Length: 108
Length: 237
Image 1 (cartoon, each protein chain N blue to C red):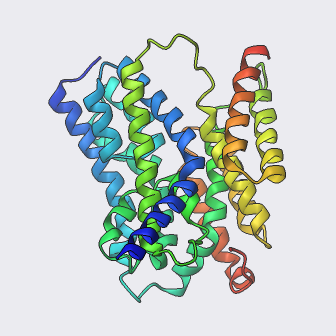
Image 2 (image 1 turned 60 degrees about the vertical axis):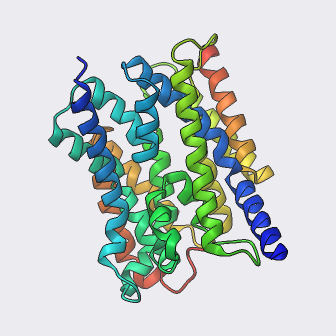
Image 3 (image 1 turned 180 degrees about the horizontal axis):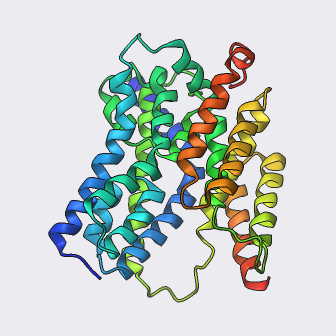
């Protein structure tokens, strides 16, 4: 089912507005110089926690109960970790990890 | 004024170098988005509009299915809130840094994607560079890559001569790489562990479709309870 263009434009507008609202809201609530210590604390510790959450989010649809049992994801992710520790270059880690994954899903 | 110009040129170059790790990921993911959108019956103008106005990678992928399935207005609002709620946290952690960014502030906030956040959240800016201009340029470079990728995807459509199955892993690889780098850079790994373990527990409890909101609550609550232990210890860099 494809919707009419005006309705599709409305949906795109809603997605854009809600996304903007989420990004701007904290800045509107906590004005200059009045950021509570608790919020600053969250700002310090949340980044690492959220990146961890996003890793899980990316892997949420991987099935461990059916072939290939998440092996391509696991091996490619381990390669990314290893390369990042070794070379400290995100670009090398990401490109190699993705290439390894693309090979693995074709051979496993 | 020449020194001003050379300094400005230097900032552009530094910002570009900083943004390079995101370039490949955004162009590839953008192409994937453009192809999906094309297959759903929406051409290059839609692709441009979504990447320019929404500018949130995973939301745009979800958006394709909302458009294709003729979602209701309420579904569109709720889905966007769920998929993008994490942006609240990005903004919260950037309040201090973006507070006095002046004319760059609105765009810096608008363009705070996962990847731009992962580039800028360490708070480091090159010596001698205007930090706000530098962050603005990094953000703008990133959105350029994303838009270019989307437009390319629309043009290529389904006409690519080879199978691109698996390119979507670049998003996972990007987050795994930043997770690893943050782990290497920090002394106390409690926040990272809380994020990983809390999300995994919620994924197992609530399932793939609905674990994100509970995970965010669990993470925030756990870190709040750990505050006496963690604050002032320089857990985060």
